[in-house]
Image 1 (cartoon, one colour):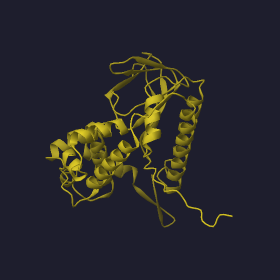
Image 2 (image 1 turned 120 degrees about the horizontal axis):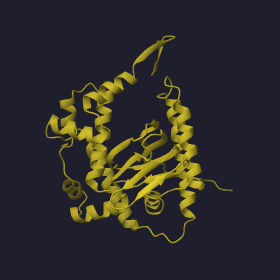
Image 3 (image 1 turned 90 degrees about the vertical axis):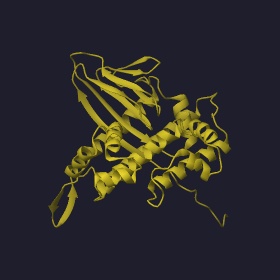
Length: 302
């Protein structure tokens, strides 16, 4: 009988944003974009054309899905000029670099046909999240957000099972490189969120602190995470800016300084590039969503 059973360290780093279900008109198009995370899209009605820059156009019909790799420039449009189309999507990221690499290397940027297990699994998790979010009064509740996290973690587990069945894939990085990449990402996260660190730090500063050259650090990080370290820094600064705009009383000028922007104009342009909204528009939208209404002497968010 075992007298000691250890528990594993849990560090999922799960992150999700920009998820929605949307019905669009004929002729709808969405501008060229790329993300620092993985994007999942599935069409439920109509046909969508997803054009991967310098590659091909992928036609997604009802039930078809696509996983778009981080850093991939792409455009989406309704294939029909007159009929409506409905799709679901979300953007997500997590810490396991091995699974992340396998998803990007084996599944991303290609059609996932409606009859496949992966399309069925992807459609189910998006539908489950949509159903959880239908009640506007509860979608920000802690319990609902935990349920969404559970759904996403189960999805990652199913993705892990699927990619393990695919033979002939070798990770593009060694164990040592995975550790270096992880050290870089942790340092970036710490520096971005530490107000005692100069917010205008450079990637060279990060590498110097880890006693590696910036050229080596850049190559390894790109191998491990699939995006450049500068894009990763941008992602962390965007997340910090989001939190400050949502929860702090800091002015937009102060938030610009705290995220390392040279001035408020540069910060505003960068934030709009990240989110599609200016900082002031984003803050107004968030405050509207978080308006508190009294209910039996307690508050709930809408």
